[in-house]
Length: 75
Image (cartoon, rainbow, N blue to C red; front, side, top):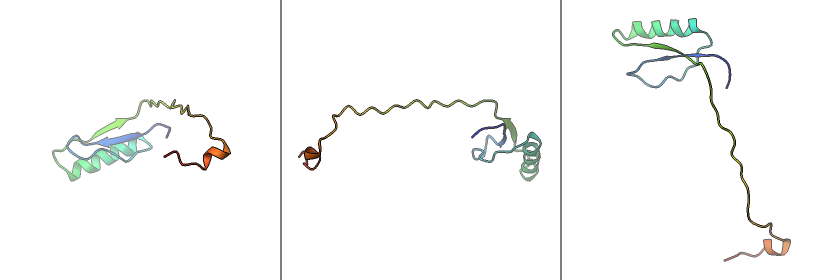
């Protein structure tokens, strides 16, 4: 997921899911929705940044089993 995009949000509706590639497309959609829903507010939101933490490390502290041990069930 990368690149600039816009979304249309209604605070009284469902969370936005559609990503518009241009500000103009989002504005057009906001206007369309506003006409269909008089009195409702539709905000055009611009994505201005992205943060992602991806530093999970998995370390196995168990000793590797030998071939003889691997067939034994430990219980």
